[in-house]
Length: 253
Image (cartoon, rainbow, N blue to C red; front, top):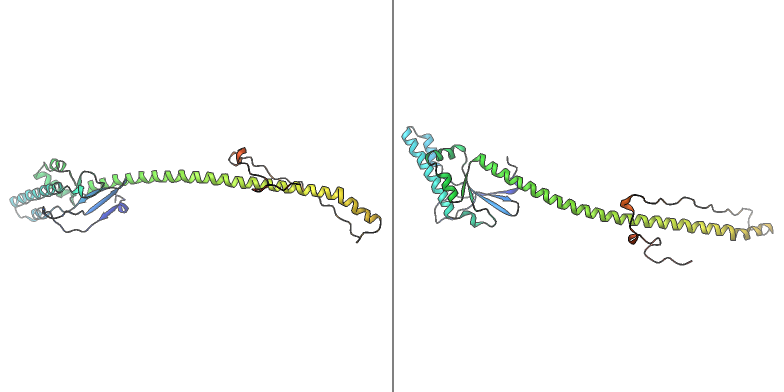
């Protein structure tokens, strides 16, 4: 109900409240920062159940007093054992869970000092409603932790994407300059073919020494130029401009 299944550990333990026995948790609530809240659910409830089944008011009242005394004894046992000190990174209190509001209210009616005793012993009494509220508070902490973690990942992803965009822009600029250089080289070669080579080749035709009757075609110039990148994200500073000839030095000539 509180959305904390991913952050809670459940244990099935034997019920024990003797001083010589090792108290063990029924529930560990994981919190952000590697902290843990310990929940104990071993408070004896026999006296309360016997009070419900009692036939007369005197017996019922006596059993309810026994119930309050048992809850008080369990609080003292939990405090004396310093339950929370058995685990690393825990708040300085342990939660005593009672499985119903009626168990709690019946004990308080017979012994109103239970709350004060619990505070002094660093034991917080929780019925289902208050335990869910505690779990929801822990769940809120986890949501904030997740948001902070996601924000860090988004920041790192943004920096990585920006770097990759700069790398791709550099490659595109290099490719554009290479295409421009190739176009210029082609046009120079075509012009040289027209002005230097074809002039001499046509003289063979005039002298009747041509190998074939086919006319030597003149290669047309390439007029299409590469588009310059205008987006500010794709315009590299001068110190990052790629060499038009690539990483190797251009051949002379």
